[in-house]
Amino acid sequence: MVSDSLIRRLERQAAVIRRHAIEIATEHVCHVGGALSIADVMAALYFHVLKVDPANPGWKGRDYFILSKGHTVLAFYSALAERGFFPVETLQAYEAKGGILAGHPTLKAPGVEVATGSLGHGLPIGVGIAIACRAEGAPNRVFVVMGDGEMQEGSVWEAALAAPRFGLDNLVAIIDHNRFQASNAVDNIIPVEPLADKWRAFRWDTVEIDGNDMAQVVAALESASGGPKAGRPMAIVAHTVKGKGVPCLENTPRAHYTRLTPEEAAEGLRGLEVTS
Image (cartoon, rainbow, N blue to C red):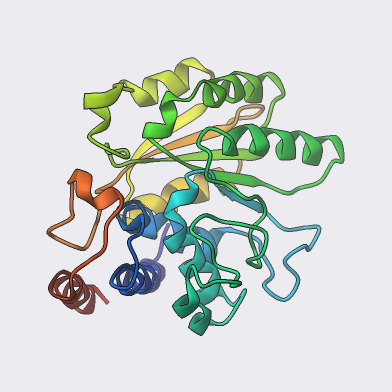
């Protein structure tokens, strides 16, 4: 049973992640919409589920996290900073020349396992890490966050075929299903529905949730933490809102890559004050 106090704490943390993303997006043209849609998932992962140690990021017993949709790095950096991997003030140096926070994750930032950005690569890498952990008899788990537009990449489905073959029940794929990609709605580019049924057909233990409802996010991740069906990886299809928390951006193509006006940012920040 998920406690109300835990949910409230994680909701506040998600609000902090969104606040950082909004503040950065007032200074930079960036991929803010997808960062806002995955804030709840990132809060639940980094403040409840993942076994990580900011003082020792390479700790052998850690869980692995891969942000395959690397362009939504604002949420990732915000979670890492709030978790203590580097000072929160470092977020102000996003994309600074010579800095550690590039527009996509790189190994310069503490806590980043894999440099990502070319879509379709995260899950294959996650499969490889999960196989290595299994071969060593190690208890490490691997979590991969992907975008729904990324489901158009063939490499995703090659990896999805391989994971059940190797019995990777230490692997969890989370699909941020906000229904938008770079230039338009996913349905207007290459539709991917029925998405959950596809993962089930590929022999993944699959659940669908409201990815912006913290109670549902936590319940799904805890079920993964407790062990999916023996020998089967788990897929969580998280239905989310692109640009969640900034009304003018929500469910719009513009949310993918933009800069917020001061008025737009203020509206989003006011909403976060209510939720936190």
